[in-house]
Image 1 (cartoon, rainbow, N blue to C red):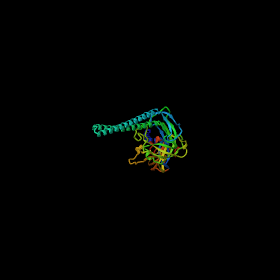
Image 2 (image 1 turned 45 degrees about the horizontal axis):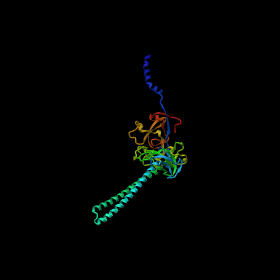
Image 3 (image 1 turned 90 degrees about the vertical axis):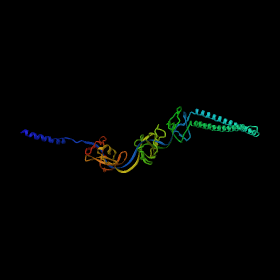
Length: 404
């Protein structure tokens, strides 16, 4: 009798196993952070590193090579345009001037001698010409006298050219000697002195980077110089507003406006001469500062600048991290997906729903959503390592305090 009931009981137990397993199996609930899609003002921007510079400044270099004999100013001194600020040892250049001056005097004496020779030959020619008319001098002797006059005339002219050449060499020597005194090219303040007496100043040359001797600046105007990448320079225009955050004063951003945009990229040190930018791929854009606090600024201070290139106005936005790239989720991408399309994960009744969206402008924190999402819907924003592994239908729980 017992054996009759054993078979059916086993069949019932086997059939009930899936229901029992489902009852005891617990579904995974993922802990996520989320944000609410809302209407906010959005402005596209370009971020770049920058530093503070004076609007007008000059870095002095030497046009001749020589040992520094005296530095005539100190850092912080006010100087006038043309004022001597540094002197090089001019002993060698002075000797060159003396030598060339002697050469000029020698050429002048030779020219006087050639002038006397010409006068003497002309006098001899006139005497022989008179004798020739009297039949006392042959034609050949008269021709020789005429040739001697022409030769003396050419010699005098050649001596004049040599004298002018010597005078030009003397002028060059005097110019080189004068360049041993380095003068301020502009009125301003000496902001740095980069050489000391006894050190050698190297003459600057085209295509060769030489160290600066001294920097003079007009300290009345401070600018921001930002290195804008070539990928972003197309969106930057004169007059665009910007925010500047200095490392020295965190939490106190300054307002600025784009002032100058160069046509060529910044040339790196050692880049080939004649090649714009060499291998550089950034453009030194200058911005004018506005607002208060500029009296605390110093040249060379490092900072970050955000230039606002476009303004989208009020728009439906979500945090940038909530927008998932279609390229990174190609398994879910349709063949007819258009440009500017991505997806977000929407939290609805404790489960995820994958939503295709069309994106617009963005700033450093928010992404504009043109279609595919409604205001008030919650989208998953993290954690980042989990975002691309979540699937539609997954159960989620939004962490407290992380919903905005």
